[in-house]
Image 1 (tube, rainbow, N blue to C red):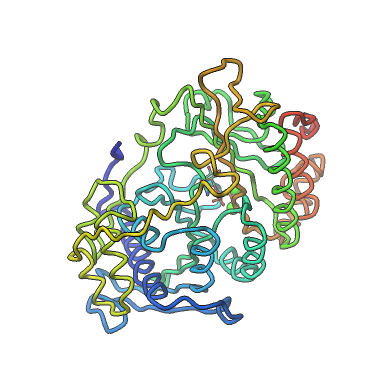
Image 2: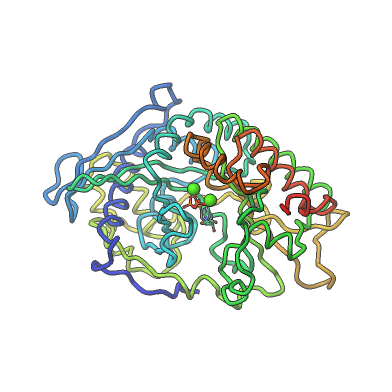
Length: 437
Ligand code: ATP
Ligand code: CA
Ligand code: CA
């Protein structure tokens, strides 16, 4: 099914930024990718690669439409994460990221002012982040890397890249690239952002009825009497992974993260096309491979564009990037790079299928039809418990039960988060205890 959406042209406020981000990624990532893979060193965790773009171009960077600077942070670390742990095919990654773009109509779904952009195939998200979040990610990068290494099934956001664009007037925009937890090919019928905190954690139910894309919160979950319908096996696995992840988040002293839960109802299927009708498509019209961006065809790693991209990446000559579209289609392509089925919590059509008490598909009453797939992940993990939060804590604590408000210290936050998630799984005590009077 083709994506339905409005094309965002050069007059869009974020057109230039978007163009620069994508051009920077394309050139920066292919540069690193063109080199022979080698083991990581300590220096790789603090490395930064700088690129300067202008309309003329030079021996390092092809010409671009605008003048800007691009910085690629710890490129080798992210390359290793992508290839060795997140099982991404390099050509696939670049192609998905730098062809067509979809701009979330919400602009900023969170309160933080961050912008979210989806890659055309909906697999990747670019999130602009604050400078403090950027610094924090660099600070914990090694710990994050080790956690991913030791926990191949972690539910924590997969960071694929950390970059910065600097515009001529000096404005610096930091952003990360991460996995979209939600699948490209399925409607998500309900979305919850769960923290284990209940103060102010409710999306108005009257508005929710009219907005299928509303992100609901802890109180909606509790009041609707929801639970995660998982059988003993999946329950045990999920609980254990959540425990390890929460322990890591406690160790790096963060808070404010949440478990994002997308629910796909198999009986309702995809007929609502919830997403496709509400997104706008961004067409960056990049300097190289621009023909590919006009294609509506689904890009796989066997597509001519992907093969062309692969060839271009093997060459360290930047001029070669412009020849990418001329490379002839070849049948010697590698198999598709999406190996998500091998990740425990993303094994059932990219998610986790609900199961009954004998670990068989759970049908919610009606047998033979329907069922549920959950799409789960821990997001927004870059907020350290800082002085600001401590002050907010004191302030909010004056009128509320101190243990039920959102900004509590990392240890308490992690414990509450974990016990809430256990409580809302089938067989748990339920979330009522977490509600403040
Ligand atoms: P705030 O700090 O106010 O919570 P934020 O700007 O940091 O907001 P996030 O909490 O990271 O934003 O995300 C906001 C919403 O965007 C989430 O509730 C979710 O609906 C969506 N979202 C974020 N990350 C992902 C992801 N990896 N996959 C799918 N959806 C996501
Ligand atoms: Ca958040
Ligand atoms: Ca945030």
